[in-house]
Amino acid sequence: MIRFFICAALVITFFATASPAQDALQTLKLPEPDKTGGKPLMQVLSERHSSRAFSDQALPPQLLSNLCWAAFGINRPDGRRTAPSARNWQEISLYLCMADGVWLYDAREHALIRLLREDLRKQTGTQPFVETAPLNIVYVADTQKMNTSAADDGALYLGADCGFIAENVYLFCASEGLAVVVRGRVQREELGLALQLEAHQRIVLAQTVGYPAN
Ligand SMILES: Cc1cc2nc3c(=O)[nH]c(=O)nc-3n(C[C@H](O)[C@H](O)[C@H](O)COP(=O)(O)O)c2cc1C
Image (cartoon, rainbow, N blue to C red; front, side):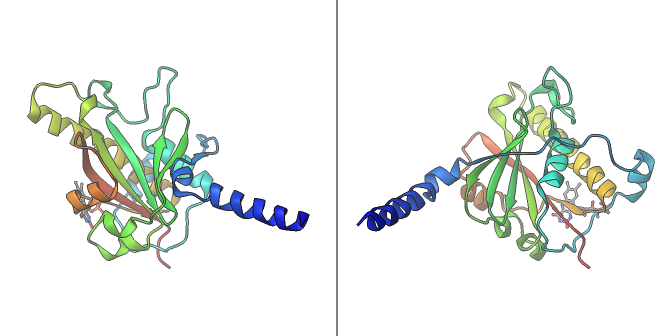
């Protein structure tokens, strides 16, 4: 009888902890980023390039941590970041689409927050490699954070702000010997629906990262 109750309790616990609602809000604290390493800047600039051949090998947590921090982490006590942003709006968010779901980079906590459990890598682009590369970053602008009256400036600024972050990722990848390509070819409407974005959020670019294919 006691054994029956123990088994029942285990089953209930399993289903309770495995519910999508709980998993969807899972937070993964990233290890401290290693800010000491890397190749010299001029060498990194010499080696920066786009690649479209990726291994499907997953990226380890320390690498993800370093990558996120290099991309758009906080580098000063006042909360400013590794990339500039127009009027310090910091309107670009990084959505990390990986095999185990979609994760939002929380720079303040240096953590990843799981938004969705689905593997949406295939939906992040039209090129075949997006489906199997371990990471597709989708850059999402929150236009509510951009209190500009001139619509043209807004579009230019969010493009520029996203470009700075994407270039940080390019330089980090060149330093680490990773393959990377930034992508404008994104089906924004479909992907926005899959990511459950709101009307004020706009997909700017995507960027695929992984180890080079052998
Ligand atoms: C805004 C932007 C959009 C791009 N979109 C794509 C894309 O959708 N797919 C792709 O394979 N490469 C894309 N690229 C990468 C360019 O094709 C690449 O940067 C260019 O060919 C120069 O090569 P390099 O990066 O090796 O110098 C894009 C680059 C930029 C800056």
